[in-house]
Amino acid sequence: MTMNEQDISLSHYTPIKDVDDSCERTCAQLLVYSDDLHPSAVTDLLGISPTKYAARGEKSPPNSLGLAPIGRVNGWFLSSEEHVQSKDLRRHLNWLIGQLQPRASALRQLQAKPRVRMYVSCPWWSNDGGGGVSLWPEQMLALAALNLECTIVFADYSDEGGQQT
Image (cartoon, rainbow, N blue to C red):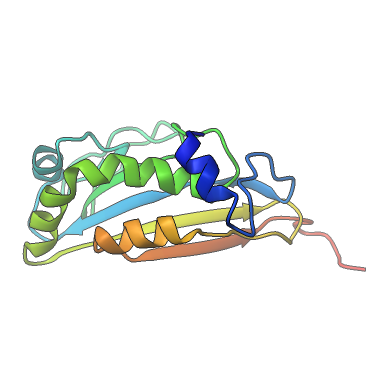
Protein backbone atom coordinates (compact mmCIF):
# COMPACT_ATOMS: atom_id res chain seq x y z
CA MET A 1 0.00 0.00 0.00
CA THR A 2 1.40 3.39 -0.93
CA MET A 3 1.46 6.22 1.57
CA ASN A 4 -1.40 7.91 -0.29
CA GLU A 5 -3.55 4.75 -0.09
CA GLN A 6 -2.71 4.41 3.59
CA ASP A 7 -3.71 8.02 4.29
CA ILE A 8 -7.00 7.54 2.43
CA SER A 9 -7.77 4.26 4.18
CA LEU A 10 -7.53 5.93 7.60
CA SER A 11 -10.64 7.99 6.82
CA HIS A 12 -12.80 5.02 5.81
CA TYR A 13 -14.93 2.82 8.04
CA THR A 14 -13.89 -0.52 6.49
CA PRO A 15 -10.16 -1.18 6.19
CA ILE A 16 -8.68 -3.42 3.51
CA LYS A 17 -8.89 -7.03 4.65
CA ASP A 18 -6.74 -9.24 2.41
CA VAL A 19 -7.54 -12.34 4.48
CA ASP A 20 -11.28 -12.77 5.01
CA ASP A 21 -12.49 -16.11 6.35
CA SER A 22 -16.02 -15.43 5.07
CA CYS A 23 -14.77 -15.15 1.46
CA GLU A 24 -13.81 -18.20 -0.59
CA ARG A 25 -12.58 -16.04 -3.48
CA THR A 26 -13.37 -12.92 -5.46
CA CYS A 27 -12.17 -11.03 -8.53
CA ALA A 28 -12.98 -8.05 -10.74
CA GLN A 29 -13.37 -8.52 -14.46
CA LEU A 30 -14.09 -6.30 -17.43
CA LEU A 31 -16.47 -8.02 -19.84
CA VAL A 32 -16.70 -6.60 -23.38
CA TYR A 33 -19.26 -7.99 -25.83
CA SER A 34 -19.70 -7.00 -29.45
CA ASP A 35 -21.91 -8.19 -32.25
CA ASP A 36 -19.43 -7.27 -34.96
CA LEU A 37 -16.06 -6.56 -33.36
CA HIS A 38 -13.64 -9.50 -33.14
CA PRO A 39 -11.84 -9.81 -29.76
CA SER A 40 -8.49 -9.17 -31.47
CA ALA A 41 -9.78 -5.71 -32.47
CA VAL A 42 -10.52 -4.99 -28.79
CA THR A 43 -6.98 -6.10 -27.91
CA ASP A 44 -5.55 -3.86 -30.64
CA LEU A 45 -7.61 -0.85 -29.54
CA LEU A 46 -6.95 -1.20 -25.80
CA GLY A 47 -3.35 -2.37 -26.14
CA ILE A 48 -3.81 -5.07 -23.53
CA SER A 49 -4.24 -8.82 -23.86
CA PRO A 50 -7.38 -10.39 -22.40
CA THR A 51 -7.24 -13.15 -19.81
CA LYS A 52 -9.93 -14.94 -21.86
CA TYR A 53 -11.84 -14.33 -25.07
CA ALA A 54 -14.45 -15.90 -27.29
CA ALA A 55 -14.94 -15.24 -30.99
CA ARG A 56 -18.21 -16.06 -32.68
CA GLY A 57 -17.82 -19.16 -34.85
CA GLU A 58 -14.24 -19.87 -33.69
CA LYS A 59 -12.82 -22.38 -31.25
CA SER A 60 -11.99 -20.74 -27.94
CA PRO A 61 -8.71 -21.46 -26.16
CA PRO A 62 -9.04 -24.65 -24.07
CA ASN A 63 -10.73 -24.18 -20.70
CA SER A 64 -9.74 -25.85 -17.41
CA LEU A 65 -11.36 -29.09 -18.60
CA GLY A 66 -9.35 -29.05 -21.82
CA LEU A 67 -12.43 -28.29 -23.93
CA ALA A 68 -12.33 -25.67 -26.68
CA PRO A 69 -15.94 -24.68 -27.34
CA ILE A 70 -17.06 -22.78 -30.42
CA GLY A 71 -17.81 -19.15 -29.51
CA ARG A 72 -21.43 -18.03 -29.79
CA VAL A 73 -20.57 -14.36 -29.18
CA ASN A 74 -17.61 -12.03 -29.48
CA GLY A 75 -16.36 -11.57 -25.95
CA TRP A 76 -13.19 -10.05 -24.52
CA PHE A 77 -12.51 -10.56 -20.80
CA LEU A 78 -9.89 -9.13 -18.45
CA SER A 79 -9.84 -10.62 -14.94
CA SER A 80 -7.86 -9.85 -11.79
CA GLU A 81 -8.18 -13.41 -10.49
CA GLU A 82 -4.72 -14.61 -11.54
CA HIS A 83 -3.05 -11.27 -10.73
CA VAL A 84 -4.30 -10.34 -7.25
CA GLN A 85 -3.89 -12.52 -4.17
CA SER A 86 -6.46 -10.95 -1.85
CA LYS A 87 -9.96 -11.69 -0.68
CA ASP A 88 -10.79 -7.98 -0.59
CA LEU A 89 -12.66 -6.91 -3.72
CA ARG A 90 -11.17 -3.41 -3.49
CA ARG A 91 -7.70 -4.81 -4.25
CA HIS A 92 -9.10 -6.53 -7.35
CA LEU A 93 -10.94 -3.40 -8.50
CA ASN A 94 -7.81 -1.31 -7.92
CA TRP A 95 -5.85 -3.70 -10.15
CA LEU A 96 -8.49 -3.60 -12.90
CA ILE A 97 -8.84 0.18 -12.69
CA GLY A 98 -5.04 0.47 -12.85
CA GLN A 99 -5.06 -1.51 -16.09
CA LEU A 100 -7.85 0.61 -17.61
CA GLN A 101 -7.10 4.19 -16.51
CA PRO A 102 -4.08 4.61 -18.84
CA ARG A 103 -6.33 3.36 -21.66
CA ALA A 104 -9.33 5.57 -20.82
CA SER A 105 -9.35 7.27 -24.23
CA ALA A 106 -9.27 3.94 -26.06
CA LEU A 107 -11.97 2.61 -23.73
CA ARG A 108 -14.20 5.58 -24.64
CA GLN A 109 -13.60 4.91 -28.35
CA LEU A 110 -14.64 1.32 -27.80
CA GLN A 111 -17.74 2.36 -25.84
CA ALA A 112 -18.74 4.67 -28.73
CA LYS A 113 -18.78 1.82 -31.25
CA PRO A 114 -22.23 0.53 -32.21
CA ARG A 115 -23.37 -2.73 -30.61
CA VAL A 116 -20.51 -2.83 -28.07
CA ARG A 117 -21.58 -3.49 -24.48
CA MET A 118 -19.29 -3.68 -21.47
CA TYR A 119 -19.37 -3.77 -17.71
CA VAL A 120 -17.34 -4.77 -14.69
CA SER A 121 -18.45 -7.97 -13.00
CA CYS A 122 -17.34 -8.81 -9.47
CA PRO A 123 -18.25 -12.31 -8.30
CA TRP A 124 -17.86 -12.87 -4.55
CA TRP A 125 -18.05 -16.44 -3.25
CA SER A 126 -18.98 -16.85 0.42
CA ASN A 127 -17.41 -19.59 2.54
CA ASP A 128 -20.02 -19.55 5.25
CA GLY A 129 -23.13 -17.80 3.95
CA GLY A 130 -22.14 -14.47 5.44
CA GLY A 131 -19.82 -11.61 4.70
CA GLY A 132 -19.90 -9.18 1.85
CA VAL A 133 -18.00 -6.44 0.11
CA SER A 134 -17.24 -2.79 0.71
CA LEU A 135 -16.30 -0.25 -1.91
CA TRP A 136 -14.59 3.03 -1.21
CA PRO A 137 -15.53 6.23 -3.03
CA GLU A 138 -12.20 6.01 -4.87
CA GLN A 139 -13.24 2.81 -6.68
CA MET A 140 -16.72 4.15 -7.43
CA LEU A 141 -15.36 7.44 -8.79
CA ALA A 142 -12.77 5.67 -10.93
CA LEU A 143 -15.38 3.34 -12.44
CA ALA A 144 -17.68 6.29 -13.10
CA ALA A 145 -14.84 8.21 -14.78
CA LEU A 146 -14.31 5.19 -17.05
CA ASN A 147 -18.08 5.06 -17.75
CA LEU A 148 -18.27 1.50 -16.43
CA GLU A 149 -21.17 -0.01 -14.58
CA CYS A 150 -20.33 -2.56 -11.91
CA THR A 151 -22.23 -5.70 -10.99
CA ILE A 152 -21.46 -7.54 -7.76
CA VAL A 153 -22.68 -11.12 -7.77
CA PHE A 154 -22.84 -13.09 -4.51
CA ALA A 155 -22.65 -16.87 -4.38
CA ASP A 156 -23.01 -18.97 -1.24
CA TYR A 157 -21.63 -22.49 -1.35
CA SER A 158 -21.56 -22.99 2.40
CA ASP A 159 -23.21 -26.16 3.60
CA GLU A 160 -24.03 -27.31 0.05
CA GLY A 161 -26.54 -30.11 0.18
CA GLY A 162 -26.65 -29.91 3.96
CA GLN A 163 -29.56 -29.01 6.14
CA GLN A 164 -29.83 -25.84 8.14
CA THR A 165 -30.53 -26.43 11.82
